[in-house]
Length: 207
Image 1 (tube, helix red, strand yellow):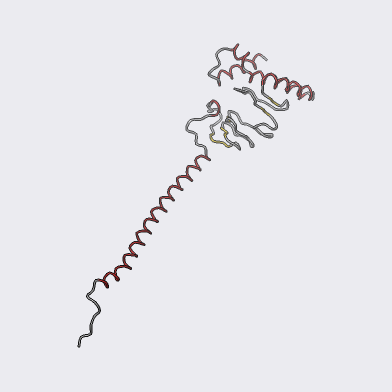
Image 2 (tube, one colour):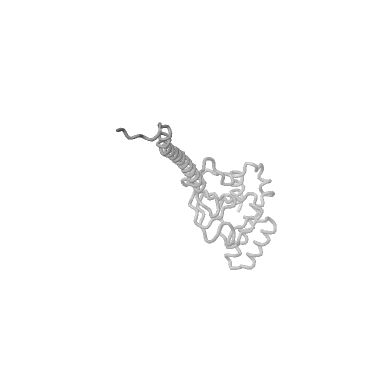
């Protein structure tokens, strides 16, 4: 029990640069309180004391603002920061019986509808993987914000915009060439009429 408690506190220090003391973490971090209450609710749920598990989970939600279904399995070293309104289980932003791999990061407002591989970062609606690291070489990114990480959808949109700009330039160049050709054609049509008007009159037959 004490070992697990120390591990929880260490997990907070590893992920939250604002954490200062162990006492502060123990007393002022609702994310940790929610996890501790969930462990009690989970134990009751697994003992088939389903109403008791639900009730403990309900009390945890009332105290912390974080709802974790008593049937949910939460691994070690989980950290919930700014947890007001967070829901884990059916109907939450992680939907269904989904496996989230070791070291994975879920971005703000992401809706995860499929399994997340180890070390991946998931963002967007629906959630999509934007970064993957090898297990054991995972670096933590607060709030799943990663530097120099291209969103594939944003990259595709940028490509479409660039292609659209190129098409606009091509159409503009073709229009300019067409205008020049039309002017040249008009000039050629006018040229015989101008020569006729500049002559000395109709030709006379020579006897």
